Figure (cartoon, rainbow, N blue to C red):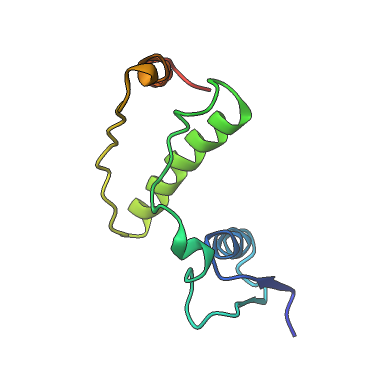
Amino acid sequence: MYDVIIIGAGLVGLGTANVLQEHNPLLRLLVLDKEKGVATHQSGHNSNVVHSGIYYTPSSLKARLAKQGNRTTYQFCQEHGLYYDRCGKVVVATKQKELPLLENIYQRGVTKRG
């Protein structure tokens, strides 16, 4: 008998389970997944990048959530002794016509985002 059953042992399912357990340690929780291991389906196919929100409109909901997710991901890793490599990102233009887009991304990066 469980209080909560979460379908999916990817990042979202495991993150949800973690938050629920933190708020209620006595919660009887079950996480189910069709795969043999955790984070092996869609979560295992992502870019493995902690996004900064630099591509989103400054102060937009997407930018604010990406920035918050960025902070909390690194904080979680530090609190739990998990390895991460905060190496940054290089964004380049490969064609002359992409230079204005690159400048826009640069301006977003130096502008304080929500």
